[in-house]
Image (spheres, rainbow, N blue to C red):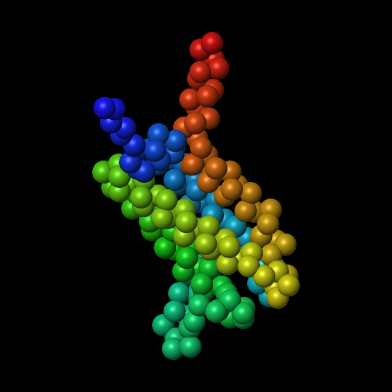
Length: 159
């Protein structure tokens, strides 16, 4: 009788994900420097999180995406939650919790990007943001497939 042992999900992610502090910090910085066009100016996501923080205490705050007034605070909230999760993943010692917090953090950051790009027919500020999202995409790809790229590179060099 042959017993098949399947690896746990955190073991799979640990084998392919890059979990260094450097790539996590670069991911946070590249996400925070995404430009958002608003009205007659532009702002980066780092500042957007701070500017719209008092908006969350208002009674008419909702998660509706159909108005610009609710669009920016929601982007700031998801970005802030993602950054906190990634920073926690740097501080945690347990590998299982590190990877879990890193995945949750990147998911929150991508949710913020999704809210930013949600409907470009309502707001035309998205054209400014698209080019500045590219470094964040590269950092995210390196996070998820960086170890695979390194292992492939090393196996090619060794042959």
